[in-house]
Length: 145
View 1 (tube, rainbow, N blue to C red):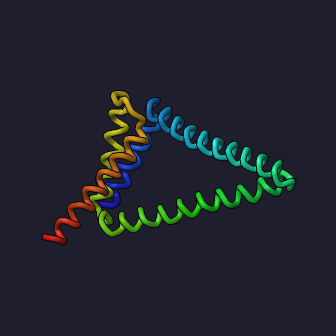
View 2 (view 1 turned 60 degrees about the vertical axis):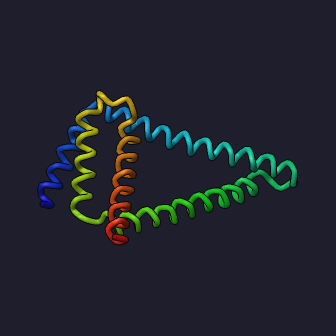
View 3 (view 1 turned 90 degrees about the vertical axis):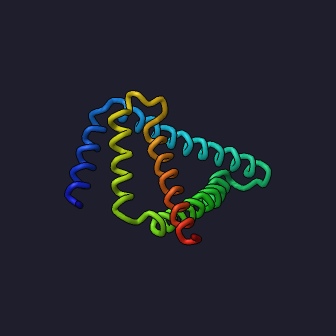
C-alpha cells in the first residue's frame, strides 16, 4: 500500500509540475502570501514611525519592539492554531483513507485544473477542510448513537 501511495503521489506531482495552470496557481498563491507579509511589514513600519514621533525614541528601537510583539502574537496564533488542527486531524482522520483522499483530491485537481475557475491551491485546502469536518461529524455521530 505504501508503494502505491508513493507511486501515485509522485506521478501526480510530476503531472502537476508539467501543467501550466497548476504552476501558475502555485505561483499566485505564494505571491499572495508574500503580499500579505509585505503588507504586515508596512503596517508595522507605519506604527513604529508614529510611535517614535510621539514618544521621542529612535525609530529602530520602536520598530524592533513593535515587530517582536506583533510577530510574537502572530507566531503564537499560528502555533496554537496549528496544534488544534493537528490534534483534530490525529483524533478523527489519522488512517489510510485520509491518505487516499488527499492523493485523490490532488490528482483530480491536477488533471482537471484547466477547467476549474478557482485557484487550485485554494480548492485543495477547502476540499480537505470539508473532508476533516465530515469525518469529525461522523465520528461524533457514531459516539453519541
